[in-house]
Image (cartoon, rainbow, N blue to C red; front, side, top):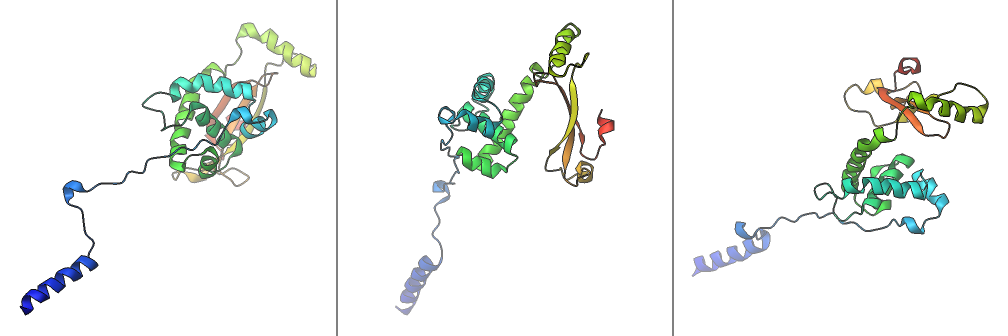
Length: 217
């Protein structure tokens, strides 16, 4: 009798103190499904605000989105529930502002891990079409290029305006010091050539910030 009461009491205590587990066959693992909440509506934004936020006007943003849409709509590559326009806008905002991924993600209605995937996909799509837009003039186009520059500054025989800029970045762990420039922040030393209409005709982004401008040129 005493033994039966003791066993019953012990069983009750164990049920209270120890967690009750599901049988292995019924155990379920909760999945974190990314949720997209639409916050961006280009059609309701003023043109001035569009340019300030994305560094492009509305027509250019829409043209860019139309070109990238096939790459961003691929079933394999498309993030869950995010329209191509929102993907493009979020990445343009990130590039234009130099902000953190988390900040841009929140303002675009997505999580940071989701935006990280979007960023990679949109940049890959942009790189795919880069050489269709960044083109140095052919020999036959040079008279027109020179004429456009002459209209601007009355200086003959100009085929491009060249300059350099440091694009800030988070350096890789390996060889971090080579990315530190003379102003003591990490960057890439980028050389850019543009035409009279401000179209970029050549871009050299191969060198880290510690490299002198003379070497880049």
